[in-house]
Image (cartoon, rainbow, N blue to C red; front, side):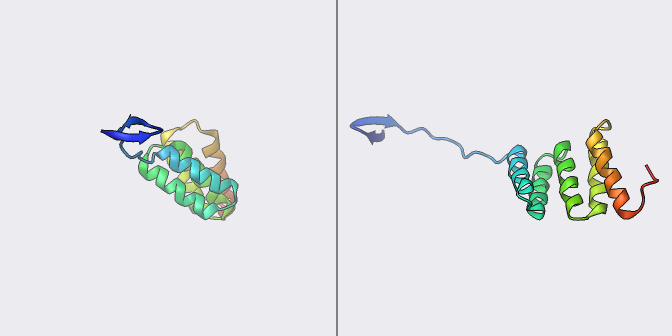
Length: 109
């Protein structure tokens, strides 16, 4: 049994639907970020993190999107979460500092 194509019978191959991965969500969110759709990017990074809770890059990217929206508390929260996953992340330290400067709390580490 199969499908007829140009007089030939091709076998029918059953495939599983592809599952959307955390990386897929991240790429879509990064595109929205580059387009200046920061709320849309944040939603995409949320989905990436929900799919892969230890996704350091997604926390950092979401923090950066929140920085553009002046959501300093969220920037600090995500930077801290990224630092729990990767204590050597220069990006997370820089974003956390930016968030703290935004709320006037640049003295506290």
